[in-house]
Image 1 (tube, helix red, strand yellow):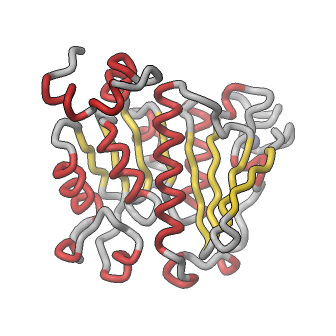
Image 2: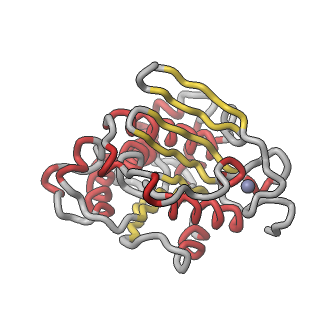
Length: 256
Ligand SMILES: [Zn+2]
């Protein structure tokens, strides 16, 4: 694949980097990323991935844009209230970069459709806001051997990691860290808990950085560590995640 004149200009600040260059940009353009959720995390992530020239971006979300979303979900505009989030996001992303393909999936990810959808992408980024989706992605990305870049939010804090448990020892999955989902009444979602919108922006942007690094093979992956952003203390810290040999998803008793 040869870059066009327009692409040489659009991606000039990538091309000038030794770490990216033409080869890296072509890699980005050839990559298929699935973003789960076009909400607080998905919004900045989608914008940066589109701007960076990820060639095919899949968006899965069954929700419509609500006025209360706009405080943090910056891929959507006031005029899009009531529209499907995947369509609203598509329209914004196309305006940023019309040289990439956006694939919209306006349904809720569930155990019946997840494997088929994920199989069509190279890498998955979880921007969902619920444990059912998080555990489903953990399971399916492990089985299908897809890197999973996952983030989670609380009102003033964010967590981020990359999971590649199919690589074996030293590569934990989300369930090695959190074996079982908490009872549903223990976890308020954004709607009930509230969140400082920009915290979602920080985490979704970091998620985009980790996806781009993963595609380009740059730097250190978060695989095996959990990065935590404490907004009130203005502090980042990282904890190591051990692989749990008894993990019901990726432990010794399971097979890929
Ligand atoms: Zn595990």
